[in-house]
Image 1 (cartoon, helix red, strand yellow):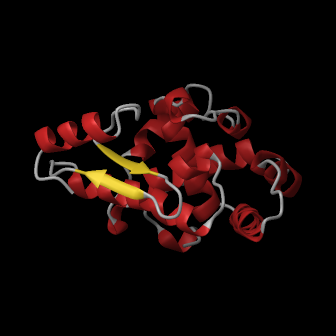
Image 2: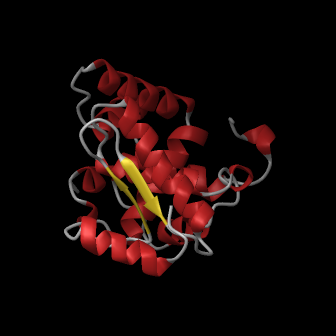
Length: 189
């Protein structure tokens, strides 16, 4: 943790010159990784996001990039805002109105954070939100997928697993967000 941006920038340029600059970073290394952040107006959000990466990589031998970022974006919001009041929600609804959220197959092809743009992060968040709060079958498939990774079983592509289990995961994701509201009785979790 750094007191200010100047100290943070100086440390990164000296010690991690090849790492793509971000306001906060999780750097995976041999053994445990490290989180770097400085006090800013986004400090709490940054810390939740980067610590999510750290926790995932501490318990899983690998995490697909889109899922790693989707979970990190999901958990970067304060607990009381994650489910119904995420800043991602409005953008996802607009994406659906304009043709749909990016397909999971497209996200699965991205292997480096530099390949992901803002819409990719939003789409990754949307798939995570759908699997956590939409269809119970999607949630079960996510749990099985993560268990396979943790157990060392090749998990395959989650998009294929969801298609096999749900038939039309894209349609279900769209319906999930178009009907999503703060009426918890109609929504799981």
